Image (cartoon, rainbow, N blue to C red):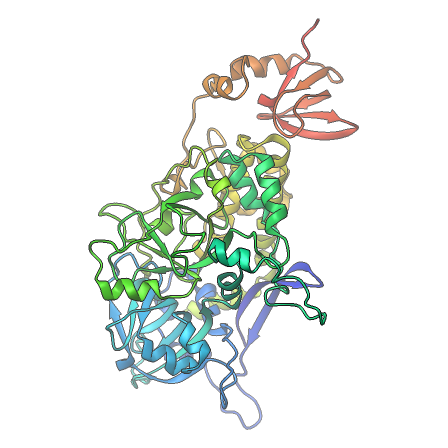
Length: 574
């Protein structure tokens, strides 16, 4: 019988692709007693009380991939010799998916050699019939003697089956931090100026033709989504072009950004609104304010300039400060919020701490040009699991959903279409394009379709940009495209006044109000000459084709382009 399914993004010959894997269980056969899968699963956890949209994502936890082990006698990092006494449920306190683990357990799982000593946080899946199923990060915490699991890590409740009452538990390690690439960053990039000068020739071949330390490290090119974020926040094209070129050089000597894993503060003493990045004290990344965001970042307030803790806070003990100061590079710790505020991860593109990576940048030329970086309110959500009514037919419904491959494939197709639409509009019309913003919001929502069983909200006039087969996943928004100004409003239509004269005057001097501007375009005939006054094709003349609710189609250099109406005006008669 079908047990579940799993979508994975992979690369084959450097070409990204999405792969769907269906998992089956053998329920009977020659010499095999017949079993009931749902009964066996209910011995592990209480699946029947999950909301229906959670069946597939939670069954997927059973198919988690474990890290390979380098220890003799163990192929992968799966441990089935734990007991309930090794685990402790702790109250939720801004953990949002991150618990804590003693040093003794890290070395028990990874050994006391280099890997075990360097690792200070792990991503796990925990299966315990008496407590439930848990997913998230475990951050090292001094002074505790067992694994601490906050309620936000619990994904399925404890088993209600009286037939399975033992207190055994199993733990799967799906990732370890800091990563090997973070280790390279710490060795090659995060050095003082004197060390950089001393290692100026480290990346050249020596006299015997052998590459020196760090020469094999070649950073990837900065992602377009990050570049678009920087551009929207006021960083000049010249600065970005220069940094993209120098940051890609082999050896990584000029690299001044990276992605680090987000974890909770084990000391509970990092000030609210502040962050601490492990392994950067005394390096060139030791800056007063750090640029932080998370993928996908499609709105300006998905990114923030956050104060970096570089000296012992008053509320932190000396021993805890020494503990944090000696951790290697590879993680960002967030201070707990003030009462009534959302967590910092929630303010960064709806993030959490169950394994999310956060992009950080300490390039001073970029930080100095950032303008209008505003903090989002975020959504106050502790991440604690919600339960529904008991459904005795839950497994049959889960099987039907897993077998509906066409629907799941269309959801992933929608994600790609929305991303491409936003990227094209952003490149053609600039960061202020309302339709690009609408596709950006929809793209972020589309990533949560399967998890939350929500429709993707998109203005109806933009539906025609997507194949009709995907319209079943969409929901209409009334009013302006720019409807979500922060996560608190993410599913509430918010109208913006039709007149954009103030915004227009601030961007293009002398531009008429939006109503007058639209009227002047409506009066044009096909083939009329127009002038492009903003965006990617600024200072060019084009041929008018047609007008839509927010956009205008023109011919530029023989190619049809769709541009923001505010960036196009009729050619004034001389």
